[in-house]
Amino acid sequence: MPPLDAPFAALADPTRRAILARLAQGEATVQDLARPFAISQPAISRHLRVLEDAGLIETRIQGTARPRRLQPDAIAQLWHWLGQYRALWEDQFQRLDAVLDRLDDQPEGPTP
Image (cartoon, rainbow, N blue to C red; front, side, top):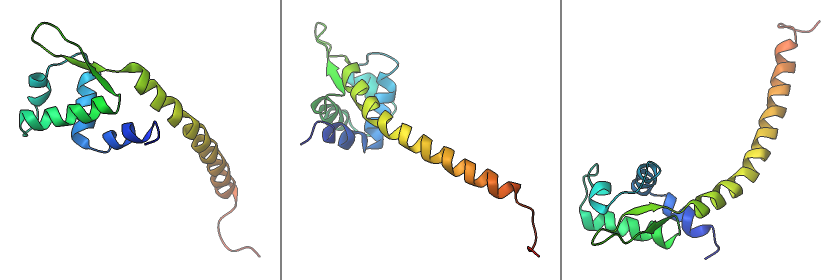
């Protein structure tokens, strides 16, 4: 699988995106991450495994606890890839704005 396929496949699930949003606030245990969801802790663990396999999060061992945290390098790689397309789309939108501005400047009504 190409390097970006696994992270984007992991991001396709809304539960995993919500988990990443929570981890953006700081480390959390499986119990912390499971709290807002109406799914079992094993299901949350499976989501965490997908995110970890995709390289988006990592597990830190702290005694008997296993808090998860974001993997900033992987997130930065995704932002870099998306940034290339953002610049392309911003250019396209600027061109569209220019066309729409020219249309707004034209007088209304039939041309004699």
